[in-house]
Amino acid sequence: MKIKSRCSWINDSALMGKYHDMEWGVPVHDDKKLFEFLILEGAQAGLTWQIILNKREGYRKAFSYFDPSKVARYSDENMGRLLANSGIVRNRLKIAAAIQNARKFLEIQNEFGSFDSYIWRFVNNKPIKNKFKSIKEIPTTTKESDAMSRDLLKKGFKFVGSTICYAFMQAVGMVNDHETKCFRYNEI
Image 1: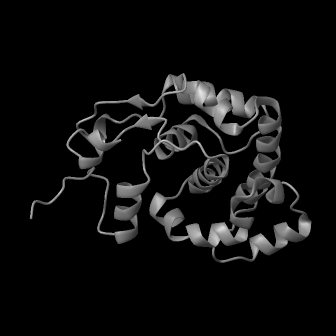
Image 2 (image 1 turned 90 degrees about the vertical axis):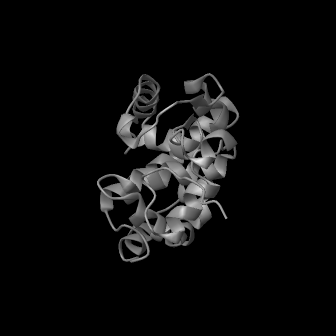
């Protein structure tokens, strides 16, 4: 049986392998899923994706399965509950940002009809298919992630710097950054 070649950033973790093979780089147009990745990518700041992926189920439970209308109504009591929850990254600024971002997410949905129709404008509503042979070639920011970051910050979002925005774009398939040797490169 021939072994499929994967991106070089994949480690021995079965969870990371499954995430790479099934989710990373697949275009997402579901607002709830987009909200999930927005929160998870913000939580990752300064950490590894492996840490966040290991805590993903904890995040789902802690943040009302990423229902932005519920998260937007979180109170100080909810903040205390989240800060005590070992199933997530217990960083006050990141938790406060997730709640703030839920409120702003709803504003965007109201203004644009959906977060999907707003966010995909940054790539002219179609994925950018890059042709990187090595992880060393993949940028951490692009002009599109810079523009997305500026606009989200202007709209009141937190933890949405250009690097976080680019990681979000990769996760939700706005860009295909699978290495060209990876079996997923042509599948997406």
